[in-house]
Image (cartoon, rainbow, N blue to C red):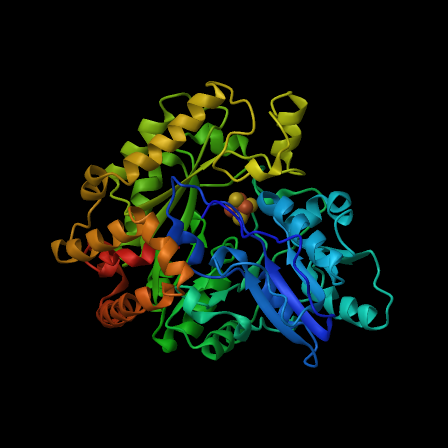
Amino acid sequence: MRIPPRLDPACRVAPPTKRHLVLLNPFYPKDPHASFGKHVLTPSLALTSIAGATPSNWTVTYHDENLLQGAPPIDPFPELVGITVHLTFAKRAYALSRWYRERGARVVLGGLHVTSCPDEAAAHADAIVVGEGVQVWPDVIADFELGSLRARYRGDFSNPYREDPPPDRSILPRRSFLTTTSLIATRGCHNRCGFCYLATEGMHMPYRKLDPEQVVEQWLRDDQPYGVFTDNNLGSDPVYLRQLCRAIRPLERIWSAAISLDTTDDEGLVREMALSGCTGVFVGFESLDDRNIAASGKRSPLAEDYARRVHVLQDHGIQVNASFVLGFDHDRPDVFDRTIEWIERTRLECATFHILTPYPGTPLFRQLEAEGRILHEDWDLYDTAHVVFRPKHMTPEELAEGYARCYERLFSHASIWKRRPADVRAVPAYLAMSYLYKRANPLWHVLIRHRLVSAAWQPIVEMTRRRHVAYRRRLAKRAPAEAQRVHPGVGPAADPWSVLM
Ligand code: SF4
């Protein structure tokens, strides 16, 4: 999980096959402090969206190096290769590009890092796509077929999202993921946090959404019981979220999503989420210090109200995976213990930690650069698991050690036990899942390599779905006010798998 597949310099290939495209997701080393399982929950939509915009007279091969299936595909050898590039695997993407180009393929690079550092990426490709790739991909293909591929294409996020072709999930290896139904209902976010990639200079991603019926159609076509919304913030527009919940409720499936905490302003909306099958949410709490939140430009409820809001979600059978960023300017060495103690007190079944990372092009990067606090620009280490800047009130080493300690404590026997669900009936399942997800990294390697990820999860997914369908029937009979009075653990909030988002 730490070493990429070898790119054989002596590898010989057949001549490129006409109209054959390989879409590649490059390898990145996994953080040994976190669960390896989180990398195979659901695929990103970057490549399936490009596949959906590819003309039907082309054949497409999908290859994700993180699924541990060995060297990149060469049989048939492609005419064209599309590689998605993120900051942390930019170097690997460039190595793959060179390897394919040396053998006669043409390579197009796209993705977030290409948008924020286009000149760097352009030096490693035949063409780059800056901004929204789906819009311009048909032009890329048409120009390639005419032998006039341009060096740079620019998609500007201006067209209605609902007019994009749907992602083509048929190219995905279904056995390699917990679910292949990753969905994006909305693009963009109404917030503009200084550390978020959405604040990257030149990004200008307006808030756009699919019709709820389009989301339903995509989900039905992929036919999986569990959907994961990978939207930046599915709760950004509460009116839309309510419409979406009503559209997906009849499916009797389960789902999870990232939302901002202000979604809990409206408990009626939380109820709608539960009734439509929401079993878990990923929430960026970022910090328990309001000064850090204010400095990052995020609009968020006060930290003293976090626990109450967590309980609003838990009371509706929705588990919370809380995400924290460590290393803000108001963080001192006690931030690690304070954060983990709060997580245990609030009985959060799952949490995620990130070291504050200034992505290039963001306001945070500019601020730290102006203050002379950027330690280096080795993008491989900009993965939120390494310290790449000088923190204000601790040393880089203290921040790195504190981050590792947070995960060690979260995954410890004592902490897993402390955070067990209030409903004793759910404790055995919670323990089983906690140990599989959080303390079984060597096993993940085997499951991924032998394409057993889906097989390992499916019985639990179906059990959870059935249990949740029964729960939501009971919830539907309760008056909304009554639903708000129940206590954590009463609903299937204790279903531990739903936190694995
Ligand atoms: S709320 Fe989340 S998605 Fe929105 S700008 Fe902030 S960090 Fe980015």
